[in-house]
Amino acid sequence: MTEESLSDIYNKSLDIISRREHSEHELTNKLLKKFKSPELIDAVVEKLKINNLVNDERYAEMYVRIRKRKGFGPKKIIYELSVRGISNSISSNAILDEGGWKEIAKNVFNKKYKDGVSSDYKDKSKQKSFMQNRGFSFQEIDSVIS
Image 1 (cartoon, rainbow, N blue to C red):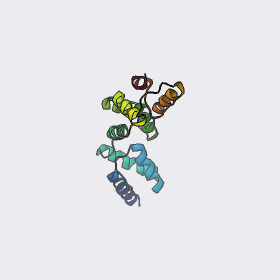
Image 2: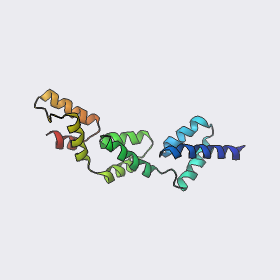
Image 3: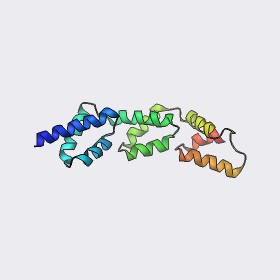
Image 4: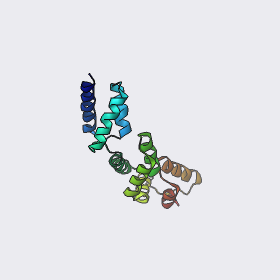
């Protein structure tokens, strides 16, 4: 029974990770919804980590690249990674390795506000709020809006 369950969990986990990269936390949660055996799930996830099929650092790098391409800033990406079970050190390293955040902030701003920085205080505040909600730091926002 246990060997069959272990095999079922392993096969399901391979099925899940074959579609896209998953963090250890995400994979564990998906498996817990289907199987009610946390000990076996932990064993399977550990085996996947040893075989480098589940790797939180690789997941963080991939996630940062995708979200950066969609115009999100480092603060928002770090938050989203933490929700997905990625430690702050791993996500911070992925953010630093990616770099070029001021350029992305500029591109995002120019795409949204084709007329440039507003001279009206209220509109300028809205522009800054938009950039903050996208996850950019004050330095990145100031480099674009100031």
